[in-house]
Amino acid sequence: MNGVRILVIDDELAIRRLLKISLEAEGHIYIEAGTGQDGLVAAATQRPDIVILDLGLPDMDGSVVLNRLREWSSVPVIVLTVKDSETDKVALLDAGADDYLTKPFGVPELLARLRVALRHKQSTVAEPVLRTADLQIDFTDRTVSIRDEIVRLTATEYELLRILAQHAGKVVTQRQLLKEIWGPQAVDQSQYLRVYIAQLRKKLERDPGSPNLIITEPGVGYRLRLADEK
Image (cartoon, rainbow, N blue to C red; front, side, top):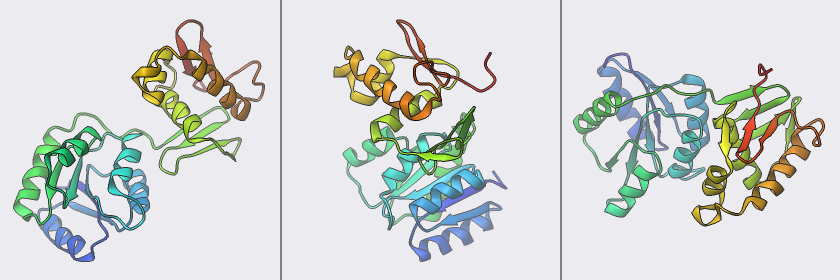
């Protein structure tokens, strides 16, 4: 496990110093960030093999960092938390954490958890930026641009575009989109999708009446067109 790139996102300097000494002593490459935003940038630019994430960050809750990271990355994440209830731990795992450690913790236990998480690592980190034709989506900053101009999207519009982008080039069914954005109770409310797809096309397409980015697959769903598609 030597030479593993480990990103530590924690605002406590003492914790970062302890982990830096301990991890580098094991031969690992240590990367650190003191805020959630800096951590997301480091995850995108430094491409760590594993992330150690504290929940108590000064600019955003660690759970928000985890959610944003999971929008584009499957890198293993070990969460550091002071919460010790079963409900809290289940919520962290459901949100995409691979493991957790309750503070205070011992370095040997952390190293053991790192080894387990790396053994279970299944896939590589996806690109944090998607570019296709005139469209660019930066999943780290949650920004969308058309021809290098920032486009303002509502939260729902962004979520819809994000899901399509995660499956770019593939059809995403109406049912899947409705369930992920509005919940299981909305799977038959296809009018929701029609309204928001129309809004997205007005903001993103050169000609919304003849869309070239967000393609309708009649009776099935929608597809975000890749630039190299015929």
